[in-house]
Image 1 (tube, rainbow, N blue to C red):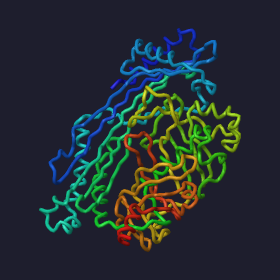
Image 2 (tube, helix red, strand yellow; image 1 turned 135 degrees about the horizontal axis):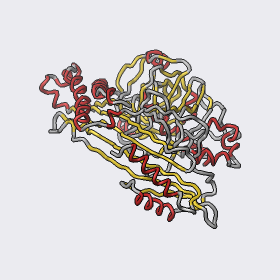
Image 3 (tube, one colour; image 1 turned 180 degrees about the vertical axis):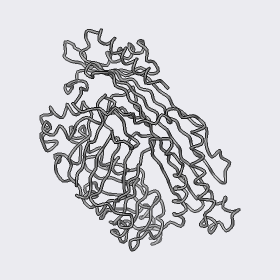
Image 4 (cartoon, rainbow, N blue to C red; image 1 turned 90 degrees about the vertical axis):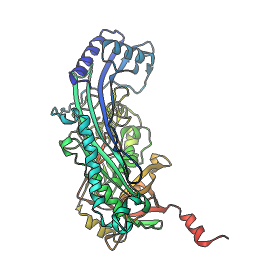
Length: 524
């Protein structure tokens, strides 16, 4: 993996060359090196398997250049990149690509400039993950599987359904998933930044699914960390316990329920449904569900939400953005009111000059600068990493959910009384566009029926689908848990620190409900 010194020198040399080009008004050089190290988990009790597959790695590095050029038609802007080459020849090729693609952008103001905020210089990455060996990766995989094996081997539930230890294997025990480590290094410089800035970031994540195939039982576990010494493999044990708890799952009818959303379900809804509506670019496009509501109530006063890219100890913390600007804390929702939006530099400058900016935000953008500062310009994609060959988008870092009153799980269950605990969902997506705020998702595991304020029985996976509206959900929050858990989409750099959340009037539809009715009534 290319060193920080290599990246910094490449940016320094590239800037010196670009300044010899008389037609270039502004330029920015971004060099990055990324490593994605993954161990696949694949164990089946009744079919020969390796358990832990050989480690895989994806390494990439290169340089990306953004330019603004003078021309008879006015200022032209563009971007070009070159993979696997940090030399001056690579820079020349990237520049040529940028020249060929240059276009006039009426919204362009300038490449990122310092905003007056101070950059935190302390290193947040884990050097141990940067030096990770194949042996350490394989060990992390076996730790995860081993913790699951320990749970299965000591399970009285399995013996009860199998009838004898020798028959447990016939139930079809399955463990699958992965343990992934991200290694990221960047250097960035431009005509506007006072010096070439550098940053390193690391992330460790794992996700495990355990199944008892013969009983249609499934459970999941996951872990997120920024440091190697916090990787203990206990998500394997969690997945096995959840699979055992889901034995003999029951169906439930569709309807409006009181529910407790687990951390993974909260994260899914926030990341796929809420957050796309809390960025400046979505407001500029008049596509947010919250148009004109900056400073106004959009949720229960029990909910607060912020993004913090510079908080020590959180896994997604970074010193600077991929625009060379400081990360920091952006309050998004405070006591139910919308108080801020995520942005990158381009979108920030564009909304400030938008003639309809006041109408779109609900306040004068110039007077709301602090609420929309560009602290989230990152070059994400392709399974994590800070990529040299894309321009900055807007991405959260550490998304933190807080409740006005911190409740225990037991207190949340008591609030619900009779309802459903929604542990894990997938295929969560907006319906009718982001602005409509309608969304759907399928409950796939780790979920239970709640009776008299207690978890009473497992819910059969894939039998209920969420059909809900974000405004309705945000307005019917009953309580928020005190314990937050880091949750992440596969190989993403964004981490949501989510608690459990109790919500009333939450709409679920039974999957296969129509066919159940046909079968029960018989042919007509």
